[in-house]
Length: 194
Length: 308
Image (cartoon, rainbow over all chains, first blue to last red; front, top):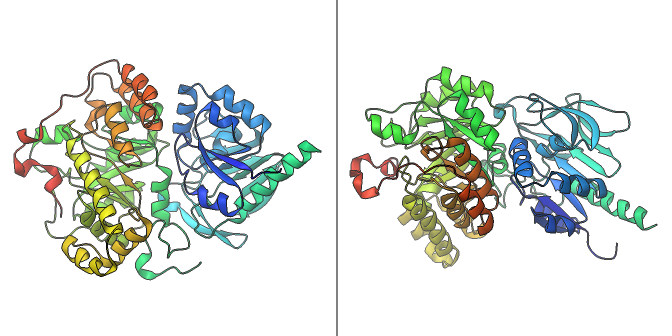
């Protein structure tokens, strides 16, 4: 691409702003997006951490389901924590609607409550697990990039990336995960142009 | 830039830490949302279905605490557990100011956040809880910057305005939000030499005041609470700089809790778009709780004056 990639962080609810400095340090432009007009203007999406039920209700109440499904089909998407839940094929405890972007099954709050939240090093970078979901099952087509306590926590498949943890809570900019997503976005558009 | 220091162990986006504290991390996840007071498991379900980001498990909402009088204590553990059992979102609970034994019980139950709250009758008129002694995060109320920094200095992971709980009257929350904003601006414009005197006058930890000056904001997220009763109230607080709103009596003391909850969530998500806030305001399906004029409340009954 000629110009900087524009990364839209879905800003209906959750930890949106912490992505800003990581995205900028990785050489892209940050945009908080919550309307269809704003979705059209971005090259890729980050579905941030927050409460997946809240985001789900707001997506339904603002009638954004079909618009977002079309956007996600056409652009790279990275789901962080709650974002993983929105992207999964199947959601457990409790079962809830999701965009079914890749063949994984995810269990909400799989590690337990806030008292189980912790900092962990993933590929030498300190990240946060906050009431994190656990990926119970992933199809073979999904590449597992990192594992924690035996569970896949960083996954990639086609134009999609998932982290059940939060690299955006780290203040060492940019995180390797933001860098990896940006590389994925650039590759996606290079391939499209070719 | 890995220079974590001992005295900044609980700070949020402090320039001196390498990562946002795990307690404040949860507060970050709650941003842009509505935290609702609930007194039963059924209400917790209504709140979650409406899109609340968290619920506050209580025996009575603040307006009923006012009515009941007497000593207001931590809610019964069985009630909190019942609400936790039906909620997939974080569950918060309140302990009395300074009552670290109640806080220990709440931590043992496994709540996600403790509110050391002026809504309950204070247990200690001199000391607040040493919140660093807990693994569970704490939220505390403040009326001004000095008070906010004292609580953060004790380890609070999240701040909120005190407002005047249970009144359905937003005036005190607005006063506290504006006061904190004004004091932050004042500190940012200060001459270096004025800082120590300001810290002394405000009763604020000097290092935290320096951090406010560097960052131009509180070192942890700041939410609004106390008197929020309508979608417009939520939009007002968010536009004044609150990052999420707590709604206490405002939902379940309204005519139509389900619709009020949904409408306030909607207005909070698009607080800066009057067309959406208007839409939300038309969807209430009933009238708001009856409000109370602050001057009708005798000075000793004003909850915002509890704590220091």
